[in-house]
Length: 199
Length: 359
Ligand code: SF4
Ligand code: SF4
Ligand code: SF4
Image (cartoon, rainbow over all chains, first blue to last red; front, top):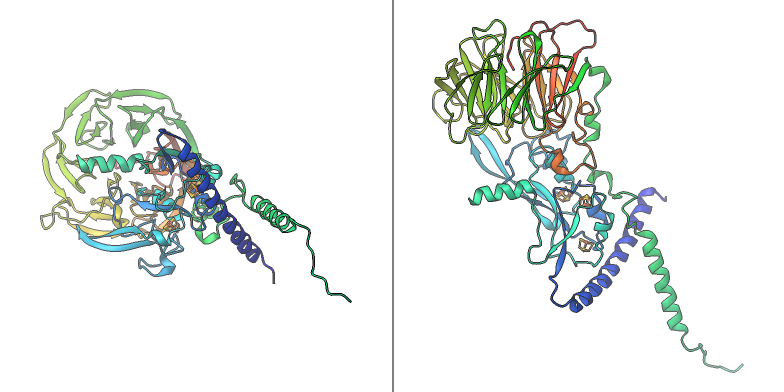
């Protein structure tokens, strides 16, 4: 039986294969350009997390089979809540780590009990990058409250395409080029929290 | 029959390879939607399904909007009801006073951003006085806006988020220190609830964000929202826990997310108005904490109340403050749009009468 799902799977498979080929070609081309670019500072793609709307495109438009975009945690911003809306599914029945209670479909958000503070349990939430596809679902959940999770292009994966396929597909123009020496952009709030801690 | 080796024209292989490559390239271009216009194409399980929780069952909506006007504040922070149902909206560095038609009656200019306020009701010994939280301290003003007192700061880390008035006591919720200060009407510190383990009046308030509300209840106990526990708790003035209610959950009878309700108000008959942040819902609970009905849902409030295509930073801290006026109307200040909304029961029965001044 041909179903819409089968068609979609095949389409995704073909799209994914084509993307990998494209990535290799584009990576080669950008390397070529970089070689010719003389002294101009090298730049890489990054997401401005204050502009990103977690539309989902980051998961599916990257030329890599597995997106170079991952969710990341700003620990300074996270309130370490027990009922974390970035961890628990909207319809969760119990506050346990059972798969059906988790918001992340791939189980990439890990929850670890840290300590009890003022009689309230506190948890650390950590993204297991190898399991994250960059869909942004946890980011949206977290943004409803504290907003410590956000999406980021991870440069151990990104092949720095000349024309980033996600940047073109991004509806909010959140992608921009940043100096390769400072390849990560933090949320303004996260930056302020980190600076507060440092001061 | 003579066996002859097959002869292929020179270059045919190259042509086949090039044609195949062109076909694959064409197919790839056709398959990849580079504009993003056809959406993310992710399976449904990867989509955050908040929309269905934003839809409020019309059968649960017991209130209708009867007024709405712009406070004109850039950075709105709190709302309270004063004498003769005047609406006090705090924000920027001022308090603006309106009638319920939006007519601006007066303004009180402040030296700092107001974070919360309460106005003493008609039956209070200091009727009409305005108590304003200014970061770490309380300022007191006459109803006409004359400064009367500036009480000492309540601690280096104090962040005052709510004030409740009893006949002879002032309670100030302090999100910075996760405690409720108890003061006299002259500003003398009488004690505290929460904040110090083991001490008298110790209570474990979990306050992950700067929303920590208190309100006086007609039964004589102070109500304190324990936001991280998603509960409303009742305390004696000495800080002894009497009862609590509330459960977490996105479903309509629960409190959404990690820390809610953000704000509460008490109807004269002892029922509660609760306001959640994130998923902005203003709801009514019975005096013992049973969910009853909805005043208004996310669709009523700011475009940033979880709307798509807004930047994520706009989503954060989407919240409203609530108060109750003498006609039993629920007055809501949308902290995102700075608009003031008034709601009354659909039947217009005025089942909630005179306000008690508690916010
Ligand atoms: S972005 Fe998606 S896949 Fe990655 S951790 Fe969040 S919910 Fe899971
Ligand atoms: S540049 Fe964009 S499309 Fe290319 S690998 Fe990096 S994130 Fe993916
Ligand atoms: S495509 Fe743009 S808006 Fe969508 S998730 Fe990626 S960075 Fe955010």
